[in-house]
Image 1 (cartoon, helix red, strand yellow):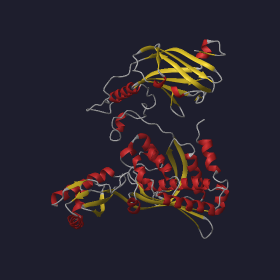
Image 2 (cartoon, helix red, strand yellow):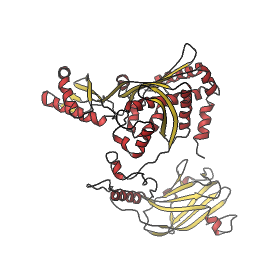
Image 3 (cartoon, helix red, strand yellow):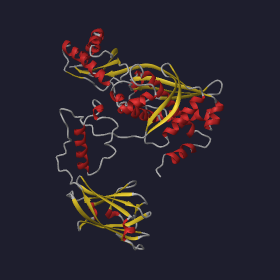
Length: 521
């Protein structure tokens, strides 16, 4: 490799560091720039094993920015290749066999002239020509051997190396009942906020808060809100209701038959309770809500599920009741275990009104002097911002009038092994603020459909268990404690962001914090 103004081959070769690998349906070259910021005005010609590749078959994939075809690079549309940045060149050619391969490529740059690369790279193993079926073992699909086989298969298929994904801190069998075709782990940075002082009925005292996130400035924002709440003596929290649903649907010949069926079901409540509760020592049937439209009847079964989130538990319990109904009621043309009125893993107005999971509130009173001194804003300004946000949410048809409920929930769900898809319903909620008679700020959040668990599912995985134990929330009898803590964290985030946007600096704190903590270097 050589370029204008450099005479030694070694110095030039260190300018751009190549790496060659197979990809499914292509070959990929990674180039890392060790010279300076480059503005490439011509990319090519490129030759692989002395065969020139047409420009339309070359795709440039930078770390950041727009994917570009090499034929589109020109003096009018230069391709930025920053210092210490890597660009992947995807070449549409058949996969290469194992062994040495010669790569020649030219880059013409505005200030540095023509850079030419002529190297020989070795591919250790050819791309697998297998049919793509992921390896599995019917006898033990969580053995070290089968997990290793899946890793090798994935690496060969994609033409890459899995060095981080394949280093879990626990034995593969620990993922049984949590993840099928287990191959490794997705590691997410974990920050610790707090301690957050809670004055709840189940969560009393200070708690450290584990937050798993890749969003810079988020943990700092929650710490800021926690500091404010602690200065007020802590957050008061209350769990008002606890319920998990499944909603079977029934089809009849006409609406009158559907109506008569609903009346019959209401008469059979005790018998249905016995059938449903026979499937579990935890599930307890609270009520059955009937809904009818056209010739369809929906029955929304509501259960208490203890310390489990309970979706699988209520599936089994409702199915037992459904079978009992089918055996005893004539005229049912069709039935389905769920007709979607439970809105599992979907946000809905019905869940907001009726509760799905836990309905929990966290509230605090912030003295006006403290708000002014620590957050650089006024009570009236924060309340005005909250009112505007509520109006905007209403206009948009949003199920949340707050600012960032989902930030806390997602970070806590990932850290503690919750069903992350339940964020869809869990992130619904309301933020309310008003001025007290003393001129202080009253702030409250209510989460009407918070779906979480401290027992079962992903909560038993080693890292998730550790995060729950940080909050003394692992195991039976602790789910309401976790619900109250989660609500307190959500309240901290709402206070922090609302005060940043409504500060006397006119939202500058919101922008500057993300610029300082959230941007890539």
